[in-house]
Image 1 (tube, one colour):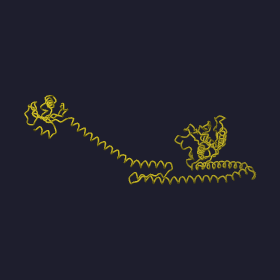
Image 2 (cartoon, rainbow, N blue to C red):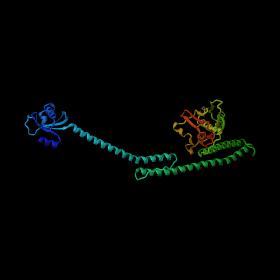
Image 3 (spheres, rainbow, N blue to C red):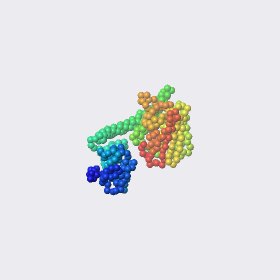
Amino acid sequence: RFAHELTALTRSQVTFVSGGTSTGTTLERAGDLEAVLAALAGPRAGSDEELERGKVFEVRARGGVALTLARALPGSMPGRRQLYVMQRSLDAETAFLRAVQASLAGLGLLALLLAVAAGIVIARRILSPVQRLVQGAEAMEGGDYDYPLEVHGGDEIARLARTFEDMRGKQRAHVASLEELARVKSEFIAVASHELRTPIGVTVGFQELMAQGALGPLTAEQREALAAIRRSMETLTKIAEDATRMAQIDSERFELCSGDCDVRALLEAAVRAALADAQGRSVEVLIEAADDLGVVRVDGPRLQQAVVNLVQNGIRFTPDGGRVVLRASQDEHALEIAVSDTGIGIPRERHADVFERAFMVRSSHHHHSSGSLEFNSAGLGLGLSIAAGIVRAHGGTIVLESAPGRGSTFTIMIPLGQDEALPVAA
């Protein structure tokens, strides 16, 4: 009866043992009781000292494996091995643990799903406005300052969006002012260059009359002065023409007039024009190209000017004793003209800037210019910019290869068979 009461309290099977014999048990199978007695008689039960403290071990029977606790009865006589044994099915215990594990796994999965859902909501709440800001920045880079941001609220992202909106408005106003300034500047240069032609023409006309003696006889000193005036007027005329052309390129009003052009004749004319401004220089200019380069359809005078500017640039920055070489080739797809010199070269970090206007001019107060191609003189710095504008108007490109002390090579590449694109401004 006592064993059954313990079973009800502990939910375990209880057996009392005295001297290796069962004095009471709640086990229903005889085989289970025999397995318990055999286990207590074996080494798994341990010594009497261990049983005094209580020993836990497993008992295997036909009913399965039972987790067994054996301990001496309090107050029992030593050596009599009077014990109480409590057993619970190991399968039942592990089934409970598995059920707990399954419940915990389910709770974990539910928590994971909730976390993922919360993460998606938070990500959409944060990343979507950030993505709109990125798209707005990309649109602003392309000139669109009205891309809708659609970011609302009072959090940090919304404040960032409002700050971005304010910055975008200021940037739009700044860009508009710069564009207006560039337009006004180009118009001023164009008007000023045009207006210069009248006084230049009058001055040149009177200079020619005086040089011819139409206004009276001249002394030798007067003729030298008139020659100096003539040279100065030619330089001023070239400056006005370059400024006008640069203004046309900047305002995208630079129009081409295409026609058949002999490439070899173009190179020879360019060399003659460049050498005309190189009086007193000892720089050899050579053409290393075939005589039968053929005919291409381009704006010959404008392309010749681009080549002249490149040759003059080579002469200007090549010391006496050096040389400038022109090479050219063409096929059915492109015309290629390369101008190489043995000059001072250009550092790589400045390659991207050489075609910018006034690249060589660093200070208007310390600017040294020359009507001729004196070595290392600055000029106005428009020659390469104009050459690049002419080539771009033809749909082509200029590539620079240069290093300090190794000279420079400017290569013009113009695609052929694109007549319909030639009238378009640069």
